[in-house]
Length: 444
Image (cartoon, rainbow, N blue to C red):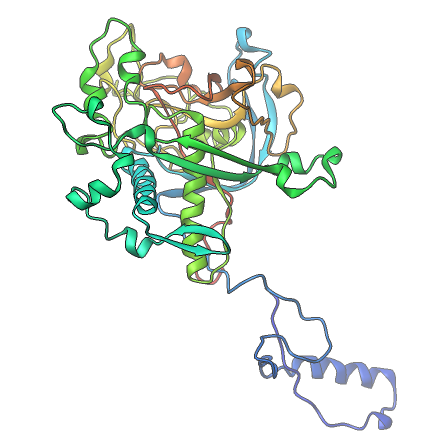
């Protein structure tokens, strides 16, 4: 941090200087005689009006808080890929040494309660617009949240004003008026830095790289039935996302597009608050890259097969160390028939829970079989913003960690699989990452 000094004048007659050494000695004394700080200039700013270069900060003093529910993953180097020889995947997951920059990551998978905050924000903002609770600035309508927070849900007058959000009469059960989940749409606007950075795109208008799309954000609760033919899972469909008993369980039924929209909303939600306090805005929340995810899952154990080490799925007492499909299908043996709480089992050495088992997790990376061969060894990543019209092959996103319905092989930190970005499953969730420096401690 640059320190500003005000130089106190020391009277002397430079014409009486006898030699250069005397001049240098007095210059050193003058520099050490700092006795104050720069004051504000006559115009009220913080920069002295003396014609010299002092620098301009982009905002207020930086105060980095610890992001709630996140842990810091320090920078480091590890061997990415299988920790044991795997002939079948020698090409698609080739062992390679890479280095990862430090970042923050959610200690647990995003839970139903956390995702529900996103759902209710979209619901409230949509209802506020229908009720006219908006403010206009520069020709753009914004939600007036002071009024939006006063909406009385269940009130007859409110229901009449937001009729467009309510299920139509033919879709109601016993005439009950409920929110139509398909109407909960998040409007996403992002800037594609990767495309803008291409040399061939130099000089193109900024609007070319702005991606706008609408995303339905309510989880697909029918995945519990759809994923398992000839299996009775209706109770999970009816209760998993809506019942408080599962509030701290990982959200599922969320596809890659919805997970990405959640990260964008989380960024917007934070930066809107920081702007209201006239504080500097922070980096974007995002899905971790495949390399970041594996590095974080290993917890500093570069050559270990699992987040807890080698080589077994049980501890010395015979207790299972993760939520998966033990043996030939003894689902409840590990303590959970389906998913378990997002903070179940012991965390790894970085403080991350369930980096193996419970639910598989989306990453931001495109799944490409030979990707390890040409990715950089510094923060490796391969991305592609697939459009709806793209072939299915271009929509494959890397999954990591294995899930409650997977065998032990998928729990290995080096095992990679994929799913299509527009597909939701009952065994896939996600967690967020954000690029911030570590929390400053007192005196450091």
